[in-house]
Amino acid sequence: MDEKDVKKIVRKNYGRIAKQSILCCTPINSSFPTTNSYCGCDTSTENISKKIGYTDEDLRNVPEGANLGLGCGNPVALASLKEGDHILDLGSGAGFDCFLAANRVGKSGKIIGVDMTPDMIDKARENAEKGNYENVEFRLGEIENLPVADNSVDVIISNCVINLSPEKERVFQEAFRVLKPGGRMMVSDIVLLKELPEFIKNNSAAYVSCVAGAVLKEQYLEFIREAGFQDIDILGESSFTIDLLVNQHSEKGVIKDLNHTIQSIKIQAIKPK
Image (cartoon, rainbow, N blue to C red; front, side):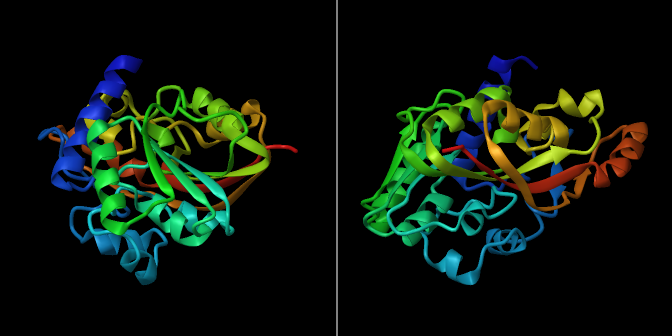
């Protein structure tokens, strides 16, 4: 799939999620349904969120409808946010992490969420109004071309979104540009320990399920280094079990081998002062 096709598919399907509150494991293509332990169809959004690091208090302290169960980690918990911090969320969805961040930085802080899906932006803005969040702003835009000024934010967070971008190098370059010197980036995302078979790479359902767009772990870390970040630390990683139900018997055998190929990873990186 080329870059335009990828973005069109992602925007269409996440717009559908925003409108219908469908979890990201919901089958997009009937011949290629997916489920996994972090983004599962067999459990509630609340249980999914607890599995990946959110607390009961987190879930209580956001507007209803903000949590769509789309993440693979809790970047807000990682970020050690302080009163007055200015935060940017890459791929903010319905605003879940933005609202959690706002609760931590207080009225003197500011949160900007950027998402390329108009329906997600609309939903996030509705949620902000419901929760009376005056220090949270949502902007329509692509994470490869952020609608954010240079050197303007203290912390960048992102939750299972960068893997969806066909230009990951550009995403990290933009993140570096908008961070203040000494600022930090905290990312939860999906990476690979070995390459995926071609039939998965080229499947749109696997792409929007945060699988087909993932790159090798070392390549992901190299993109961060090349953007200029230093002190890159892996703060946690775990297997991202996936069960891809396909019709072809031979492909089922391939799928079985993928259970230790896909990882959820938590990364911190610093922009030098």
